[in-house]
Image (cartoon, rainbow, N blue to C red; front, side, top):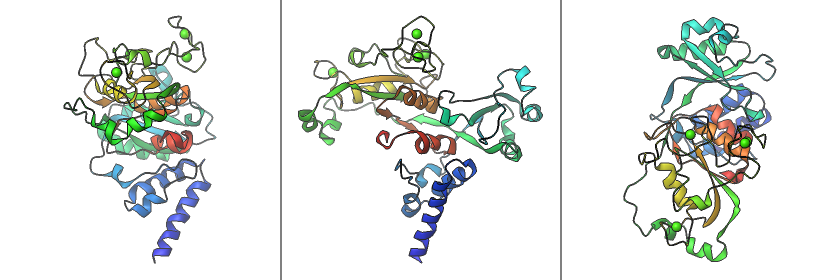
Length: 338
Ligand SMILES: [Ca+2]
Ligand SMILES: [Ca+2]
Ligand SMILES: [Ca+2]
Ligand SMILES: [Ca+2]
């Protein structure tokens, strides 16, 4: 029986792998993996290229989703744009018959710069008590492969009592590693977090500068889809300043804290020693305030991928799951990023 069970999981995983372009299968595979909370179930959720897998933990009772937002994936041969960001465009949208019933206010691509994510849209609507009905109505449309809720993400807990001796340095054998290497400024860490104080005295010298972007000319000089992205990006506010709003806003400190662990300037008699010593830190701001809510997490991951970072830090999460966000690992990220 055990062998049969193994075979069944393998068979489903194999079917999933055979159909990478079929989003309905993709979502079924994803739910299959997420719903099976045994180690065996998770085991077969690997894909050969990513080795990333979904565990049952992400689908527990803590699942929370953003009110009034859905991801919608359209079929590959759907030629018409769903993009509608004004009432005039919504009146011509393929979703126009749903606009009034559900209070749809916006249908746009959240991940515009990645061709592999062009079939995914985000639908914003106001009649949130009808969320499940809207999902059902969207999935009846012939050009829709699936519709799903957008998971709510939050920064992980930041303790306020970390000992000055930094126990992580000992736990991770950093001192032995530093005898081998003290890092390289050629390596880029994408700090996808609430925000990063780029002028921090123990960070500023390690903040990445985009060599192909001219600051302040309102032109996307390097053609990566982001105007004036010289020192990272802020997808939460859609601008090029990844600092917290408010110069003295210390409630907005999670990303700066994580940036210090990963990439503080080291051996400078200031602050802390980072794991990396020398590294280029790309600040990517994904929150609109210091509440801990991550408003644009995967838009931030998109920027990190477009920029070609070597490591992505995502010190946040939630109880919900999403096939759309899973697509980032199964379709886009090399395994070295996980
Ligand atoms: Ca640019
Ligand atoms: Ca520019
Ligand atoms: Ca900003
Ligand atoms: Ca330091």
